[in-house]
Image (cartoon, rainbow, N blue to C red; front, side):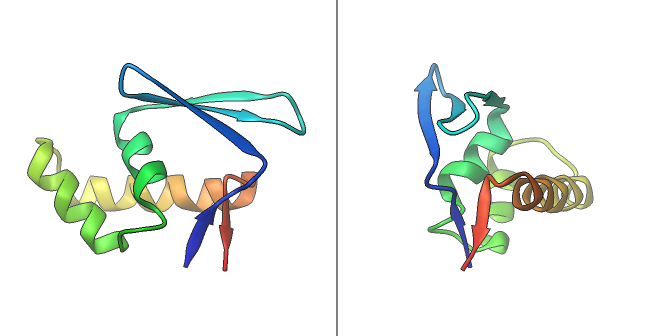
Length: 84
């Protein structure tokens, strides 16, 4: 199970998520799909997220899966997500 890092402050402005790392003073903005993953990572499984995104966006399923895996893996490396 993944959880969001606790050292990040989150702001939502016009459906876009902005993350502010309190320790490093760095800011990151997420696109719509990354924002959805950020908001859902603790409550939905990967498959549930994929199915919901496929129902909302005209997107290729294989590309979506690959992009989600990349975002989550990069997020774990950069400290956005913590594996519990």
